[in-house]
Image 1 (spheres, rainbow, N blue to C red):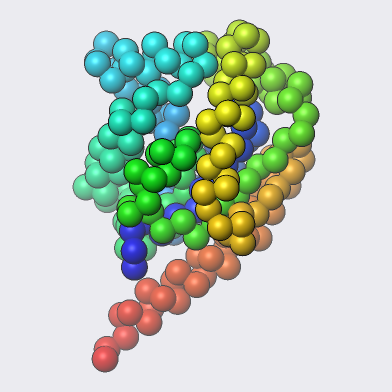
Image 2 (cartoon, rainbow, N blue to C red; image 1 turned 90 degrees about the vertical axis):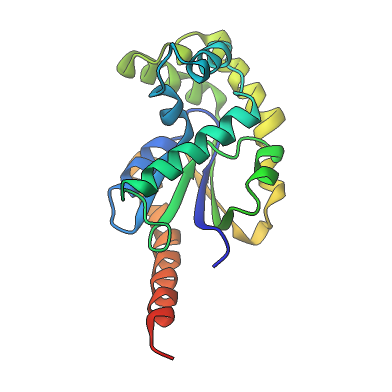
Length: 209
């Protein structure tokens, strides 16, 4: 196998990537890694923590080297403690790669089997979702409309082009305005067969020659 067997959850801020990813992460055989959640758990007084706060408070992306470096460190830690088993688990990535350069940096480490594109054509609805999430989770980076709108502009300018980096035949579109349960159901319809194929390959490799 070439690199981490990966499914990307992709979409604009507020599209529900985190909700779907967390649900998938509770199912054996899937490991969910949300880049934003990892950053938010970093000690804010550390150098990387200060970098995250500096950029996220303005709605901007953390620099690529810091983002990919943090991702590497987290994946190594999860592997070391046994939470993530690369040979067995499908990696569900949420929030990385966030631009084409990051996709290029991770090219040799990820075997992207599918990109789940959560599509939202109603920006106002997504902004309302982010506001509600900010109130519920005390995520101050999502509280100001100016910051939220800036994050959307950054997504359209820097993140959306990532979709064109991957072959169109591995990109599946899902309407993010549906209920979270329906979004998850449609994601499962796509990723469960991928997981089954993954397990079949593992079983074939374990067969004696």
